[in-house]
Length: 269
Image 1: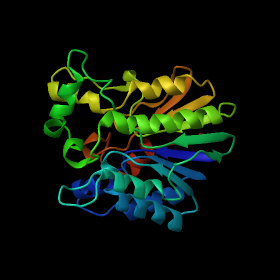
Image 2: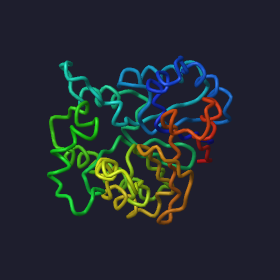
Image 3: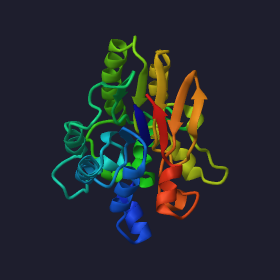
C-alpha cells in the first residue's frame, strides 16, 4: 500500500492569502498522485465542519482512502458560539475517516489522534503557570481553543488511549500519527524572537515522544504543527515524518501545486 502523508494544509487561510479557491486544485493534484491512502495530520481547512467536508470531498472525488486527525485550528471555536472545542473535536472524532482507533494498512497498524501540549517544551526558567496565564495574549489557542479544562488534561486523555493501543499492537509494525511535536529536537528556536521562543511551550510534549520510544515496533512517527519541514529523518531508531504544507509565506516557492509536491511524502506500508 502506498500512503501519502501531509499536514497543515490550512486551505482556508491559504485561500485568503492567494485570493482564490484552491480546493479543486488540491483534489485534481491528489487524483494524479500514485497512492492508495492519504493521511492528513491535522489543520485541514478551517473549523471542524470545513475539515470534514474536505475529507468527504476527497472520498467522493478521488479513488483514495483518506484518514485524518484534528489539529488545533480544527477545534477553534469563536467566543460567541455556544459549543466548545470538545464539540468540534467530537464531531471530527466520530467521523468514520478519523483515526479514533487502530487501523490496518498494508503490514502496518496505524495509531493516531490529535494530541496536545503540556508546556514540557517551554523555556526551562519560566514557571508553567506563566504559560497558562500568557497564552491568550501570545497564542491564538488561548482565544479560540475553548476546552474549559487544562491543557495537560487534554493531552493526558490522548496518552491514556495511545498507551492502551500501543500495548495491544506491540507485536505489529506501527505508524503513529498526531498533530503536535513529540521530540524537542524538532522545535524551532529564534535568535531574535523572544515571543516565539516562549511559544514553544504550545508546540507539543516530550511525554508523547517518550511513550512511542518505548515501542521498538513503532517504525514511523508523523506530525506537523510546526511549519518547518524536516522531511523523513531517522530519529531514535524511527522514521520521523514532518513535512507540513503551511501558509503561503512558509513555502519554498509560490506555486500551489508545486508546493503540494514538496510538502507531501509517499511511503510503502
